[in-house]
Image 1 (cartoon, rainbow, N blue to C red):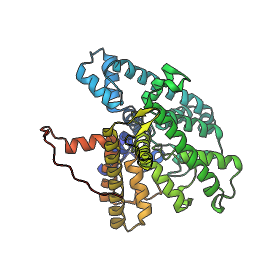
Image 2: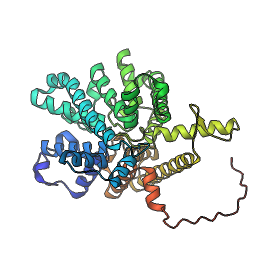
Image 3: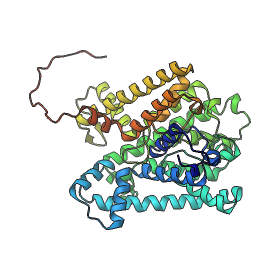
Image 4: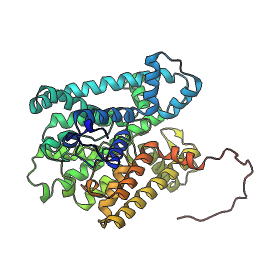
Length: 418
């Protein structure tokens, strides 16, 4: 809210500042003011710091400060770190966290260096360096904040739809940031020997590939082959299809005007936004593993198998229950928020559902209605962004934890479902 944070020198309103801070910390990317034209370089730096903290995770960032200051990491902190990055055990957790921090810095600097030639040419030396660093961190952290408003408010990366270089670098940063820290560790330790990876890493890689390929084919043949995008070249169609297939899973950038997509295309994006990235990553959403567990359970039911199996391993029953609870919670919040906003603002339900899916999935894609929403609707989006970043299980355990568990079990009775 400091006057130095805005270009006009006027104090931003409390709700605007709260919305922006929440969106940055929760690495969402929904904004009520264009980041480039409304916020000053100081304000943009504050946003970037919040994105970095939110992307790495508050716990990981705190541990980084503790390691730098030479403080000893106790067992309580190690256990918290294990939960924060979805590690299988406490053993070696500090070493793993150090690897995550170093890899994060290296990947973000590499991304900035790769983007620098294009942005240097377009914006000059100083702005080019700042833009390259800002967008590299924003892409890797799956935040979706951009500084391209000078070309047009809320334009995101639409000016680079034909740039294979910018598309490729940003896509790479998004995917690497969204596959999860443990998958990095498997790639680092086991290289190309995928059979030796953890089952979770295998599931993440397969689901990520599927969730890229199927939407890509849909966008390429259905959306960008239609009249609305008839002036696109073949190269632009390929890059636009690939980018829009990847960015909805919590990244938040866009290279085309999303309002030009059909309702079917917007619905596909909503489903991708709700799915999100992978556990222990910079991404939000329900997570790819949640969707994978539910589909594998579905296949086991169809095949009349007692256990849910994957890659020669049996999925524990607790994971299946958690996946079902997370799905129901996300769908309930997403639908309730969209319907309430639609009733308050008098807007189409699909448009409002797009914004609430973007908020709870911590994505940042928008059909352009967020800046014009009233305070109640913005508070709903703030709450959804917070809940989406905190995580489904964290929310459920915080709300329904029972310290005095009763070991007695009620009688069992059959109920027919389906």
